[in-house]
Amino acid sequence: MCLVVELFQELQDVHHQGTIYGVMTVQEEVGLRGATTSVDVVRPDLAW
Image (tube, rainbow, N blue to C red; front, side):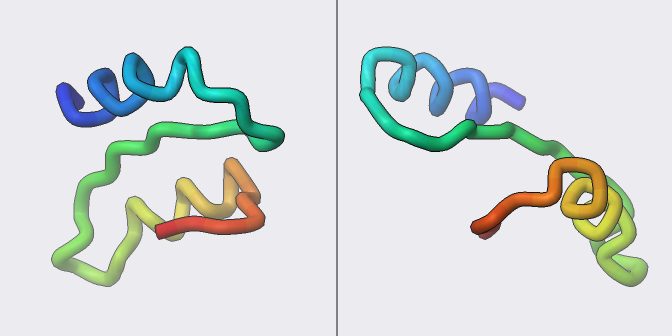
């Protein structure tokens, strides 16, 4: 969570056209369940 907070603090003064979402997930070791749910909710154009 600290990394997401730091990233948003760094990006707050950077102009960009998109919307940035910070997502933290669990249960990745049993089938990427958390990441799949996040992508289904946010519906991003780009994710990594």
